[in-house]
Image (tube, rainbow, N blue to C red):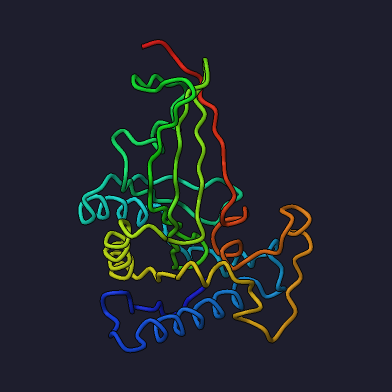
Length: 244
């Protein structure tokens, strides 16, 4: 089982003079330790199951965090279980949009959205929290979900970004980070986790040809600790339309 001390510094607890640099230095050490423990063979597809066992954020904690986020951030927050290929679970915090959110509608077997017009997109903006199941860490991205009716189906596309860019999301992001730290889940800056593992554990050779063959690029830390797909990979879900 992986065990190390999480970084308890966050955006509101650091000072104004170089505090972010100090925090990121701690995050780099944390990432290096996690990679060394979980991937002794230095391959993305060869995780040490014993080291990963019960080392990450449990589903119970993830669901509790979602409830806390909904209350503290005053925004709908939905816990979504990661699939078998992913090493994380998700929390989607709806920041711009309406209820029920598209992320909730996407899980239904069929849909009727009264104000959806053929060819006209409905967009929502979320903070997407990835909670690692193999280490006590989290990373946060800004994502757009778009719903559009095309005849007898609804097309739902998810478009992640390499971090958080919209200023209207920053206040909620800061509060979200505080909640993670309070629950001993280390927040990892997204600009760090998109870097390759050699940036944090350069002393040995990392071999990831299998990943490159599958996804067409080299993996970043995010693909080791959270999920396999590239960080900005889009997804599309098609849901049948039903009568009102």
